[in-house]
Amino acid sequence: MDWLNRRRIVMYSWSFVAVYIFIAGLSYSSGKGINDSRGQALGSDYICFYAASELAREGDVSGIYDIKQIYRKEVELAGDQADMVGFYYPPTFLLLVLPLAYMPYVVSLAIWISTTLLGYAALLRRIAPDSATLGLALAYPGAFQNAIHGQNGFLTTALLGWGLVLLRGCPVPAGILLGLLTYKPHLALLVFLALLAGRCWEALAAAAFSAGAFALASAAVFGPDAWLSFKDQIPFVSNITEAGYLPWVKMSTVFAASRLVGIGIQPSYILQGIITFCVIILVFWVWHREMSYYLKVSVLIAGIFLATPYAFQYDLALLAAAIAFYGWEGYKKGWLPYEKAVLFVVWIMPQINDPIARFTNIQIVPLILAAFLMLAMRRIYFFERSIL
Picture 1 (cartoon, one colour):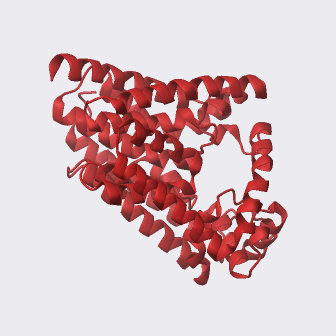
Picture 2: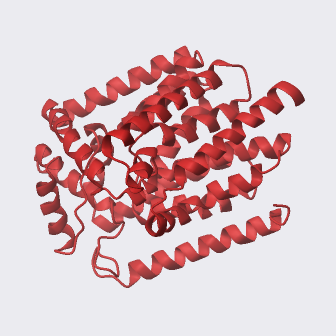
Picture 3: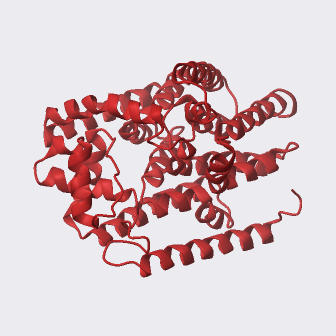
């Protein structure tokens, strides 16, 4: 990877950004109203956040978790061509997005993307304080996938990343941010395990308090029935995931990869369970030991995607933080063979995994992340035991 020098990194990164801006601008400007050139709502998935917020503002909280009701609102907003996009988040996330429904859709979408993008970009610049970081952060295909779909990957990355950055010096604020990550409980569980393994008691207590207060606040605003409706929706989400109505080609998990190649539901769950157990052991071991903090964080973030059966293309924005942590570690302490090549593959992966899955029925994300974790363990062995 010697050909990929600083000058080329900067040039290629900003070229990617220019292409993204052109694609987004073309799609948005050739549409009509809140719809893009294909007749779909701008921001694609964002329409479910906005529709859920409008239903909550109208007092129909139970309708948020009724796919027919929320689709009716989406059609009302975007017309008959609107895709059916369900709201599968707990009421805590609804609490975060509720203010957006008090603005026009396009203004709301622009504010959502720009503010969460700012938190994402500032985080990566903090992790890797280098002039090339901003271009790499914005050019990362996972960032574009999240932005074009109006999704919450930037918010997830900012909460988790800033929580982990602050953890060593400001454990209470770090815990508060990590507790807010429970709006995606399937991604947050491994983080709490890492805090436990690392004996980060102040942060763990703050995270538990933050998560509890977050849940109580949502119940106070929307009523306890909102949580009951969310709970009742879980079997439905599980069923459509198992059946592929939530497309496996866009799901970055072991379970989806297994189902995509034709393995049955129960064997896929067993395989996912085995991998999840292995990742839990690995993360606990890494966080329990004294070693490079940047490597601990890289293992945790990559492990999240292997440990959960439910993660989507836009969630891959979170991997930008893992790339930044690991990349800065390698830049400051030296590279081992193949590390830069694998990091590049992880970086480009959100651009290529969907088409590869569509044409080959092979979901490459778990395979690439497994390779990433193997390199991390090799670095831990060489640098923590032999070289440093």
